Image (cartoon, rainbow, N blue to C red; front, side, top):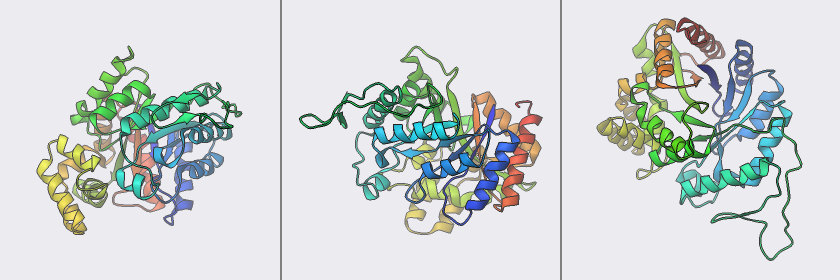
Length: 350
């Protein structure tokens, strides 16, 4: 099992620290460094910055938001980043959510599965450097009746095939991800509930005559290092409450729905009710200890190694760490990276 690092969002006053974390991950042999975007920092600029200051580690978008860019623009960006990084780019995509898609980008959040499938088709065509012709429900290239003509990408990426990942949570989105992508970006993944994600992914792979062999299962997990497990869990409550309670609307919160599928229906309702009422402390307190512990790495090196073994046994191929928890200082985050490597070696997974 390989290790990754997720830097999250930028522009929050920790940019210099983020570079130091990325460089330490590079030195320690981490496989990939991911950056996120929502409605603040964009991932493409951040990844260029990281790639310029690292040597071996891959850089990946987790995620580029589909409503933010046309598919041809995403293909251009992917090709450019792969060229600038010397063949180290991984393209992660996601539909975002209704509030960001419609409130920030002005793009209607409808038929996300069909939109994603068409988006990937266009990217694949563009990246193959064939002349781009497409006729679909969301995009027609070139536009009919005008001066447009089929054009092909002028940039030559370092690799013939840039790995394409999709962030997916719901069963139908997971199944489609297994069918059309090279890897999956997961969140709040628990080895004990692995079937919730892996069964749909397997079903999608089966539609193309493939298995999960060679498919990168890449969930992001928070890591909190320390002897006091309860303190490590408690330090992550606000993060979990934000997603389960506040990401999206009451009617459409994918993370809340995931918690419910994991068996935490009552808690998911309580967290969301309190969070939407702006009782953030109450929402954080309502997140079950077991949910956080099952979906993160908490404890000393030995306990983290045991959990890493569980992730590997569940089929995870790249475990992406989001250092934080009790100590979010630069020293604390770098220590978490080092403990991650030590735990991987202790578990015999390196």
